[in-house]
Length: 107
Image (tube, rainbow, N blue to C red; front, side, top):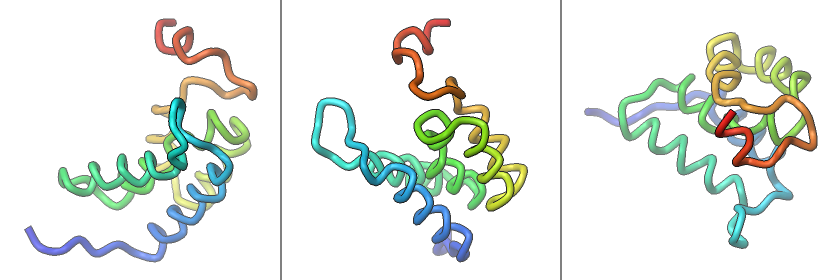
């Protein structure tokens, strides 16, 4: 497999992920939350995912953590239907504040 070439859209998504989550930390640690998003995106790319899938990985928590449906609309406008559909599929809360994690995962 050759090198992965990412477009300016990926760079834009990386910046958007940072902006959406810059004030968040991972639960139980001091690690910046966007480090998790970069790790998920890297896993997508390492396993043969497309650029759109890697972009969606960067943005997969933006809707539930940062603004709900209006954020999903911004993602759709900025990154297209495919990315927005993937992000929507990863979203389990559209309101802020969202309900506790365990309840969202068991419903």
